[in-house]
Length: 263
Image (cartoon, rainbow, N blue to C red; front, side, top):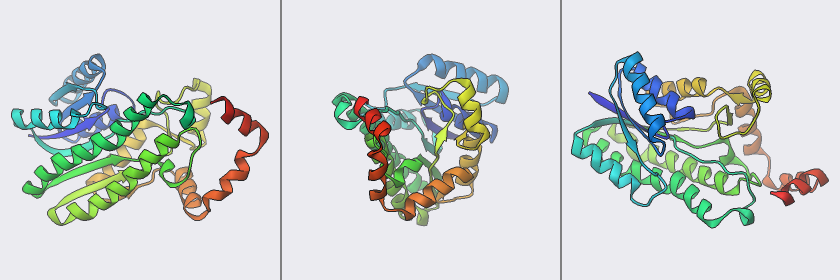
């Protein structure tokens, strides 16, 4: 039986990726640093969808995380047909106010581990001449975003990386799909329920289950990229056309300047 491997599978979008792929007949390899949440996910998928769930509790910011995951899959004989690089972390803070240790973790999680997982499993898929890879980037990959410079820069890296990888692996029957969501209704955002409902109602914030369905559908169709939602499409289109220097006058507005000084 083929497996779908998902990083950050214990909560948020990753949890819905796991459920959606299990409903499509895949056994799941669920990875995160939350073992209790992984156990709950495995129990739910096993009971409701009758699919096997292998859980790997792992700190994906560690240097050897990708190699350890790959080695275990090889040792256990798991046929990994799909790799979903979903794990992420978001910290609102100006660069000079962000602890260096946190910067290192964000870069390792988004860039290093994702790249190495694609490298290791990509080579395996290339030998089999089949496979699918999904990479979670972000709408922030198109425009500078003060207070999340570190986050946006890693997502811009993933944008370029996934696009290049698509060209490299396509001749071998392997699809690479990059997803560029805007705001998604997950615990990454500290908002009350009333605000969340309003943002979802106006299409500014996407429900994670809806995003997961759209992304998996795009991946199965072999699409190179997905920008989900009309609002996010508009934002990406504008950011692609407008020069970044137009952001500077906005940052000089007094309330915004004071806010940035506090972060």
